[in-house]
Amino acid sequence: MKNLDGRVVIVTGGSGGIGIVASELMANRGAHVVLAELDGERAQTEAQRLLSQGLKATAIQTDVADKKSVEAMVQKVTGQLGRIDGLVNNAAMFSRVPMSRVGSLEITEAEWDKMMEINVKGVWNVCSSVVPVMKTQSYGKIVNISSGTALKGSPSRIHYVTSKAAVIGYTKSLAMEIGEHNIYVNCIAPGSTLAEEDPTPEIIAVREKAVASRCIKRIQTPEDLAGPITFFIGPDSDFITGQTLVVDGGSCLH
View 1 (tube, rainbow, N blue to C red):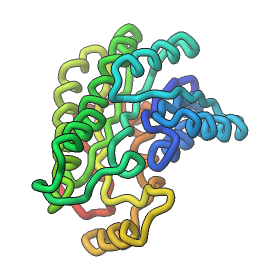
View 2 (view 1 turned 90 degrees about the vertical axis):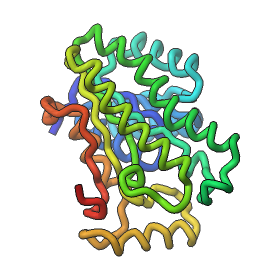
View 3 (view 1 turned 135 degrees about the horizontal axis):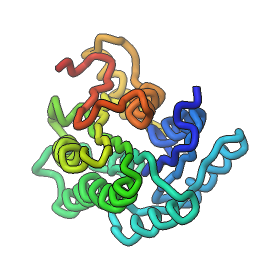
View 4 (view 1 turned 120 degrees about the vertical axis):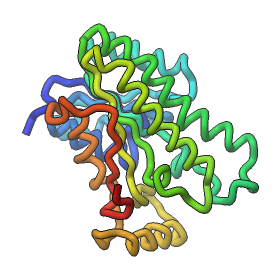
């Protein structure tokens, strides 16, 4: 199925975990995926891997917390590929950019600020640079990645949970603001996902513990998110906007 044929889709944090799995699925559906990634060398490696499969991919080193870096990335995409049809805001401070999994009184001010800079301001930075391009096309699809913890809460990492709750609010407001331009903005809220490449026994234990609260009794993987992300980027979701889809195996029912 090539329902993304001819489309250009930017995926921030696109070279690992959820980002690369979703990018590969969209590329297989015909999209030219742009891996906008802080680790430029890794992004190049993953882009070359996709190209070797006959898929379309470009790697661009990007720091979503740096507005100039984001603007430069968007200029490269439009200059080389001519358009931007989709955006997946996947980059976040979580595992590859590690965070403390501690109570609210133990989080430092510096880590709080860094969390908001990447997870909230980063989404705003990228959308602010991409939306003008989509407006000129009178079309675009944006998918923001939140977290099920934003709906359920968590006894630790309150800075992460707060940042992901902000993403849900941002999604709703942006959808209302730009819907008249035929631009759709939706959100995915994953459950506890084994997206780490070299998970510690502690992380595996956390992912296994999450299984108990699910209707579907297994560990969640990045592959479980790729389909829903691709759905929101593709034409089958052309009358859906401002929504948050929880993908967690039936843990948070709402």
